Image (cartoon, rainbow, N blue to C red):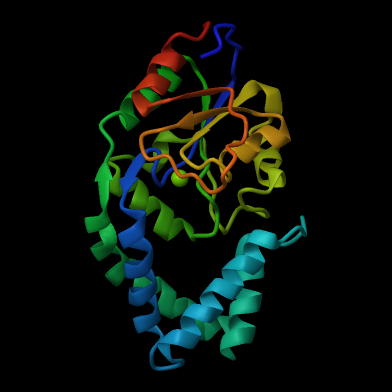
Length: 242
Ligand SMILES: [Mg+2]
């Protein structure tokens, strides 16, 4: 660790594999199967999965600052499925209410998540749940609750409904710093993904690679200012200047 510590004003935290112990290898396939089952009266499973990925990729690649992720997603998803938003949305609302809760079996509380949040609160840091906003709030708030956490702990939670960009686009991080009215250099982004979370550095934020459930997406690991366990992150925050 670098000994010279900066004075941060905000802490951005990733959710899956960082604050939440989520078995992503089991969760993603189970999620896709459950969601596609909801639409089986309209489209066969394979085509549904293909369209879901295509619409999600369109959101990830979006660079239009005037289009929210939700808009980009439904424009593409409706076009591919040949269904209207009014046909799709009620099914999704039902899905997140009735089916998604069963997926909680793949998520577990991380014992140190609360320590990090409490440490950040003691330092009066603005707290952002910087989870990739490819999901609706309904899906993010439930996963947060699987981790024993809740909405009111955060000043901002990024969802497909309120953001215009996704990780690893640096524009995603700049949009957050704009919303919370904080300079990028006064923000620390902590997460387990070497690409999606460490790309915050390209927007001028400092980064902390959380190694408990580290996710390597490339051979060469991008730069991070700090690294350690989630517990180390809590101690690190506690050690910051007041
Ligand atoms: Mg993650």
